Length: 47
Image (tube, rainbow, N blue to C red; front, side, top):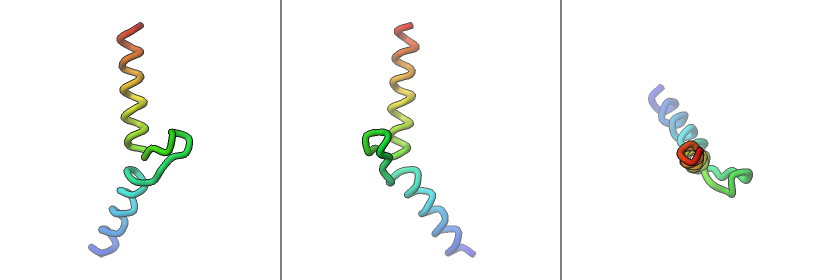
């Protein structure tokens, strides 16, 4: 059971932090999300 849990966590980690998204300039999803919110906060300050 523990081996299955560790394999699942490894897969989820890869999916969220390592795979590359072509639509976001080949950045991992976590990095793309961080960039999105940083840009949104800057636009909120300008407005």
